[in-house]
Length: 94
Image 1 (cartoon, rainbow, N blue to C red):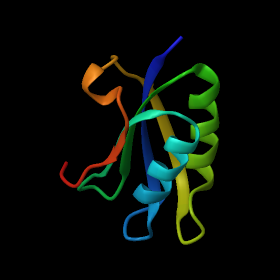
Image 2: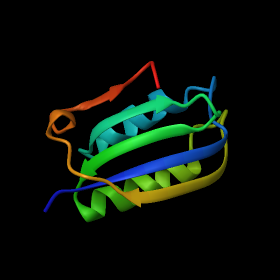
Image 3: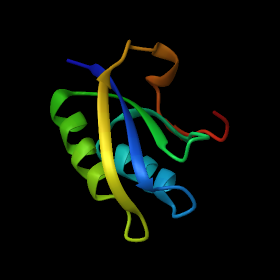
Image 4: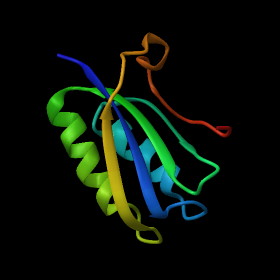
């Protein structure tokens, strides 16, 4: 069963390839949705997947790519948005 979550990642996560790391990881885990930088320095991730794939994604978000320094990942329930159910994208505006 598919569910959706929104994650907000804090730390040194902009300008270090974090969004592309998220996109690659999401595709590998068969998670759909998007990621984008926020003006406050965080990265937002909206994800649709199974409970298992979302748990695996969260673990990877906490780790991040080598150049990043993740301080915190907050998670919240999110409504299922069908327009994000077909693939995973890196968005460029907030």
